[in-house]
Length: 252
Length: 353
Image 1 (tube, rainbow over the protein chains, first blue to last red):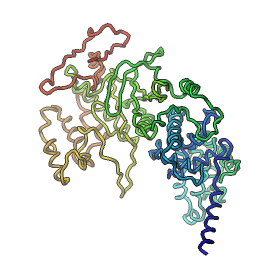
Image 2: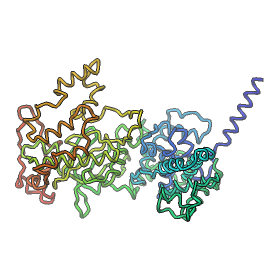
Image 3: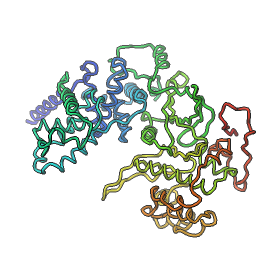
Image 4: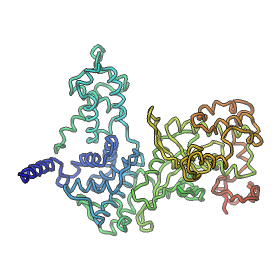
């Protein structure tokens, strides 16, 4: 009886394990940002810091050739640099172990041997490389902050019951965060990305901003947030966000 | 441990996803010749003299090798014993300096690095490169030949407070204010420098308290509220600590003892307001700038003319050590004829001891 229970649990664990991405068999950089997101969450970094790491990654490989560097070492270095730049440092040892364990699922922490020191040295050097290639410009655009302020303003504007009936904030934040899988996140300004994430969330949830339809242009409600975002540009960013969900291989 | 310092730059693939496998020699060559397009080599500047040394590391005066021949100050990023990669304190300083752009804050030009060679075990050194300033306030004050008029003193204070107002309104705390960190150019423009201890702060929400360390500010210049709770004035209770502090530093309330030294009554009043014991009552930079001290005769006046009489850089680091009893003993009388053999070095000479 007891054995059966344990077997069921083992089976469940097994399934959960199988749902996680296998970085070892993924071609090239196809799962690089997934790796950053997974390790970032495991390291307890705030979403904005994980997003910053993804931005560092995209910036790095805008300049560098993807074939020249080990994708996961650079990703780990980006997490370290992002943590430091946002005053949320992660310990190098933790970063190395989390990265190593995510690649080799089920493996324990590394012994303090050759492999550990190689990893650690590689990540430390890669961090210096990333910093230099970014020209020490570590200020990532704070689209999370913009979105937060927009959401707070909108919340005041919505009738409380309507605001509660749909997870607008959570959905918009999720779109914003997921957009950082895409290198296009570098192409737009932070307030524009925030508005696009918010508009997309409203569309997906079928919610419209109260009284927006009385305006000549029913998308003009966000002009209080940012004056210089054209309707077409907003749609362009929303399309780029949606493209993230059509990536191959399927993100999990 | 020796593995950490092994040549590994750029990164050695841990998983063999990288397509090129190089021999050791090829690797070394590759590292030496690696070009960082956004981070120049420090050899574009030529070191002239060392002008500072402290827990933060070393600062050098250097000159651009290009046609501008511009002078800069280079601050070395201390990387020894750094087990966590590039030091977060240096990153913080860089981020803060990139944010702050103001006439009264030192200007960060760029970050440079040395070439990684066998000579430095393939580990680059990093430098923060700043616009060069000829003097620091501590150096100027320690030189008896430098005499500030009241109007010039006002100008120094005004610029100091302007700089402070700017950094505080950008939500940055300097946390190491002292005369050696206040630079003054030969044109009399004051610049706040050394943001190595600085950090961003958030305005505490009502009901919560920001918990920042009190182990900041060079000991001599710490305000009383930061001395409480330290190990410097050890006492069993805060009351005991207070007694120890007041025994050493004097009374906690405004008194007459400053009067003989600060003749100007407005100046004395401003000092009292800046040295208020209760931090809540102490004047902030904005309030201080509105003080009558700055708006009564003699009005603040430019320092350039006074500084033009001195052709020698004055830094605390280069000033002769003060010995008790020899306080006024000053060998180096700067003069335009002192060293005429260095015409290319603009008009400023660096003291060498």
